Length: 343
Ligand code: UT7
Image (cartoon, rainbow, N blue to C red; front, side, top):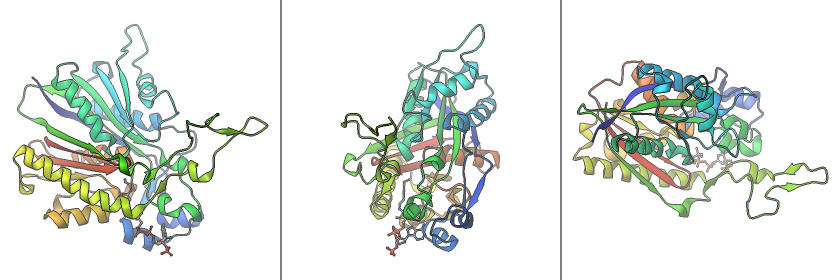
């Protein structure tokens, strides 16, 4: 059975920087830089321009990961695309990315399978699990895994939506998961979900039980109540569950791999709130120098946070071959996951 390793990483964030001050001044959110920094650690985030879709953000991230893996897009055997903000209700963003990478063009198109994963902040680790399983089973040699989000299109940028709107930003991260005979790679992934938390953090937009599922007025225009259009969150419940589940799944991963926290060189935690990650690190005795963070610059980019972190850490030289790394995520669902990787 081959091992599955991450052969290349890439990321892309849109150029528009929105500082906390700009959020208040330009968008009229009733907030302050001080409140956001103190509660979350976020200083700024990126917003995509209108006209840019989630699969567009994914293209440069994917190309970078493919190039750094030393392969051609046509060597890919599969695409797994994690997002909670897909371009459309359907089809998934994976097929758009396939087309935009040119895989459908020319005399020998590569009609590889494209799978969308809808697991919010845990989406990347769920996708990594699918990719590594396909590679280890011998079904695929190279799988492109992408996490990308365009949150700015669905934030209630008003005084009413300030709690959620202060947290999220746009971006994309990607990696290529490849087969190797070397003794390295993804040693284990650990996933969980608790549907009792399904309504604690949700964006419903429509209710499929209704006929039609979005109410139309006489002119045939759909109307969505603001409470359904924007994500709703009980932040304190999410915070409590995030701490408990992230610690739990990290402990499970370490125990299963026969590791202690000291054996791990770098921790890539989901970037929802710097305070959550600092609290976890303090609770289980991880030195802050081992925590990789970028929430200060990008906010919460949901499925994209961990692959962006990996790509930045690799490109800056902080993440090096031979290191043992742990990735941990928690998000809406509730869903969570961890991965242990020998880089
Ligand atoms: O990826 C997973 C997704 N999300 C998370 O992991 C988020 C987890 N939760 C959190 O990070 C925190 O709950 C938040 C940072 C979202 C909120 O912090 P909190 O300490 O739970 O604040 P709160 O919602 O209880 O609000 C406290 C106060 C309220 O005012 P009053 O009622 O005490 O007068 C809010 O209206 O802070 C107010 N507030 C704000 N003030 C200024 C809420 N958002 C803002 C804001 N600026 N952006």
